[in-house]
Length: 282
Image 1 (cartoon, rainbow, N blue to C red):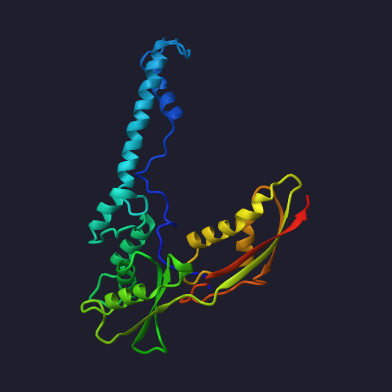
Image 2 (image 1 turned 90 degrees about the horizontal axis):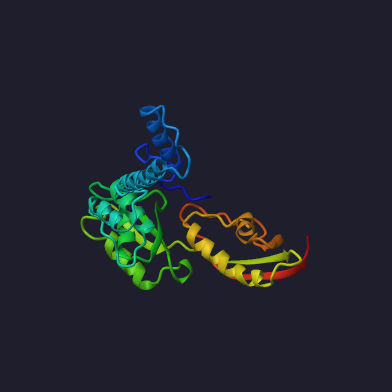
């Protein structure tokens, strides 16, 4: 299964953020000049009036961009840096030391969704991610339909496997008075499964450097870190897409032979990555 979670990425660009074009502003200003004085004919690039219009159009573009930036600073999906800090603080969410903008956005969404008397899935996720900045993803689920809950963690370091201090910090946070619903029995566990080894054969174009082969393990691991999460499937087609660089003629993934399908509460981790140079072809 693939991960399903609430995001802001599917929303259209808000109407308050205008699409800007210097040429459109410049042309509109020239048209205004001609409308004011229909007899004006000095529309050459060297004309002083055109130079003034170009300078004014650029200033207008900068001003409109500043308005766009101000609008973005007040929208959770677009806000970055200090603007995001202030927006998150409105919801009583403060940036953790070393926390990225993306992680802070996610925690803020969870804080908004999880506001209740306690015990909601979103609230537990928010508290877990707040307990340790290294928590990359969280799944919360019932065990056998009873009051026992599991909080499964995916780490941003150590190949996704949470260490003992992380598990302890999250356990203390989600079981604290005022957080844990009175009937919930909570167990904090690792979401990671057995590491998946990757083996692939790669053919290069005749003039492509062999250094492309050497870069592929780093590319795969970096892409997996950026894109994967709990419930994210490891598909051979995903691997192929990440390493089909300029200069690559063909890629065949030998392992995994088929999709590694994860449920919503587990996460695949990467083991060894072997990239075999299979030759050159067109």
